[in-house]
Image (cartoon, rainbow, N blue to C red; front, side, top):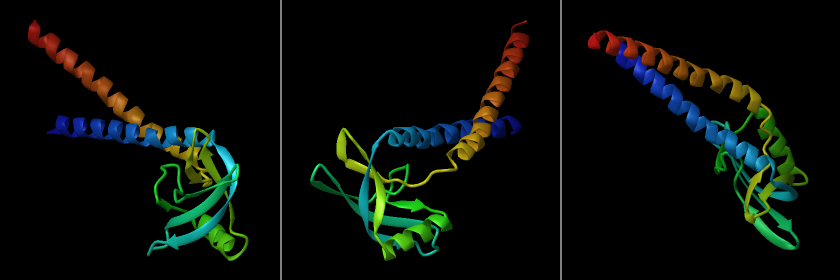
Length: 153
């Protein structure tokens, strides 16, 4: 039973790490996109006020586009800090001007230039489950090798 728990933990840690790596791949891909001024059209808060959904418009070379992605994950609803929500609410009351990032190869693919200042902290935290998963795989491999070698003697 103990080995089953270890195997489940190892696989869970590795799966979690690989899933989270998609976040970082998107972050670095979007980080290289072009920036343009846009106008915030709509801002919604979830019931518990920790997630936002927004829509915006932006213009490139005289052509108008609209978008509703507000995170690196390019999802409609996005977790947001109180500071970011406060900032967006003030923008809605004032100028409505925001920075939008768009893919120069596909100008309709855009995202609100959300501040992901804690990316390195998240990366650091995600490293540990991945490293533990690899460590447990290594230990599991050594134990299995010893069992196989002792059985063949």
